[in-house]
Length: 221
Image 1 (spheres, helix red, strand yellow):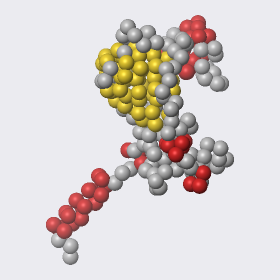
Image 2: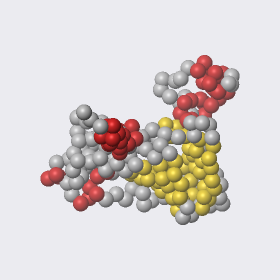
Image 3: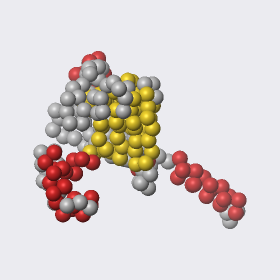
């Protein structure tokens, strides 16, 4: 007959196992099972990612990337340029669970409201003065104006933005805990292919067809 104290210890052990077991829903990319897996971007087969390049074809160059070294062209409607170092531009990141981007902002430039469905974002301001903000699922808005050397974090999947509110060009670097964080831009609701029906957008934003059509025209839709 099992004693009550023994049953209590067994229950406690089971609870501890549940608490400390890493569930997939609580993590980003899976942990790697080898030292490295440089992505073969030309492979015809892929299972939730990229297969590995044969080790015999791997060189030192696969682990270095200079795509974040140059200032971007910000002469566009948002005044922004983004250079990405993710698995698609830097195959050496494959299976390592991280990526980075460089964001250049013109005076008044905006990184428009967007979210990253597969990653938490952590950034540091290199130059300029930025208003950084995000909105929670409870519709609470958190924001702060940051200057060079200051850091911010955006929880995974939440809508956020960065606005240059300074008197010079802005520059910040961002790291993600995913090799391919993905991005969902809020403005692209008006520029999808095929187009989202006007009746959906007019009802969602409580505006008329004329407003929706005007916004669509700005995005060439």
